[in-house]
Length: 422
View 1 (tube, helix red, strand yellow):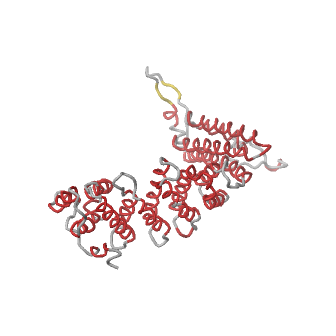
View 2 (spheres, helix red, strand yellow):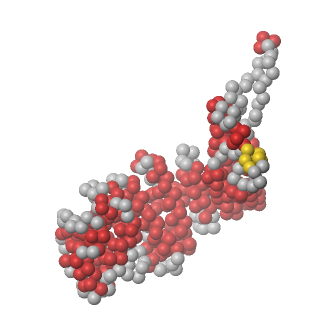
View 3 (cartoon, rainbow, N blue to C red):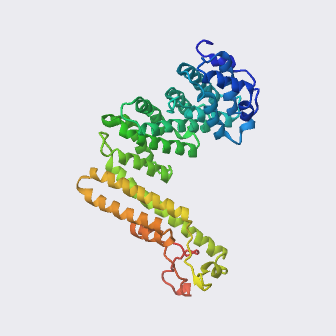
């Protein structure tokens, strides 16, 4: 066991240096760099310093305020100073094994395990490329349900870095092949059961999975069917009304990118869901406006004191009336992103709708125009005009108070909401 996993030899040593700055300034660190810059092989002394003191900095409290900087400095002082390729490979392999162990450890803080998983994903070769041998350990961490979600998320970021790196490489290159190898892992993530992770963590991981799979699509060429499991998972997500709007939209985006591949898509079903998501997106924004108006009405806040809120001053100091908007600008931008994204997806999928192709293209163009308008004019009126166009049944009418009548003489009493809402 010790021959196969020499890091076990150093697993129990207590760190001597409580902060990375102390380690950097130590005589041991200076000797390590001097030896390895000169081309020396990695000796037991060097390995102990790397594993017991270097990687230990990832979980020590003394470095908790500068975790990102610690990871960057560890790469620089321990790896960039190695000139011999064999020594670099030895240090790299030891680090990969140790980092996976730290990421799984329940003997260090959760922040330390997260930091170890992040460093595993960031570790680089002498050439500056990400370490390919770290891909498999990262995949194991991501799919291990016994590990806390935060560590799994950190490991998934490492896999995502590999898809981005591969996007800039040529098809069939070692980097591309390595990145494509994570597709089975992505397939498992897209099918994660609800009981395995909190909803927020599950949504985040699946949203990133769809993004990473999209990055890999250009590298697959005729092998695009490798993504069929992920596409099936995306279809399951869009059909589930309990999933978040944004995740379902991201799933439709991914599916639309497969429109020109050999993967058979349920285009009609996807379009139906797309239409529903347009309405849901607008209802959410419009509902926020109505909720705030309702709150103002029943509390009186903004009614008696509304005059000051509705008035402003021009550069000359003259009072001017200001249009009052209830929807936060960030919510308007989110609504805009949703409409534009769905419009672009609809346009890509329109080619699969046979005789309705031109109709869907026109609908996509119209939807995109409203999304752009909301972005350019993030006002309540922009949301209202969009919902009037795409979901008029959701419009809330302002109902005036009825005239006083004698209930006994009224043949059919009118029904009014006490809050003036239909």
